Length: 94
Image (cartoon, rainbow, N blue to C red; front, side, top):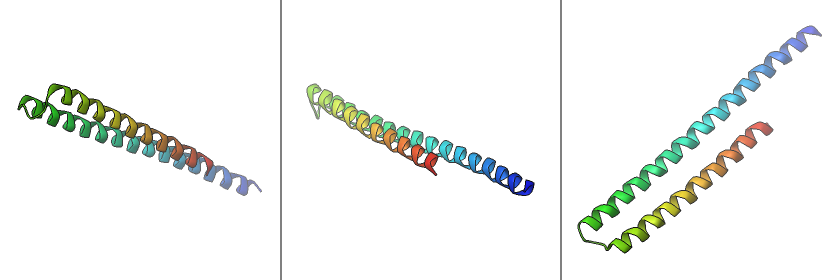
């Protein structure tokens, strides 16, 4: 009987460690996705600023475009956070 209990406790600890590692990996991947999204935003903003500087678009259009890029970025980051929370909840259910 004691062997069964020891075996179960050993597996239980290993399982808990695996869950913790999976959660940590999920958080790191979510953060990397957010950073990637922000880098894309930065590149888009730089392109818009360059177009404004080169007189290809008006300053009003620059402001509208940058606001739209920010809105899209915020929406995508919100989706990523929701997916990350759902994944964390899924891992805890197992």
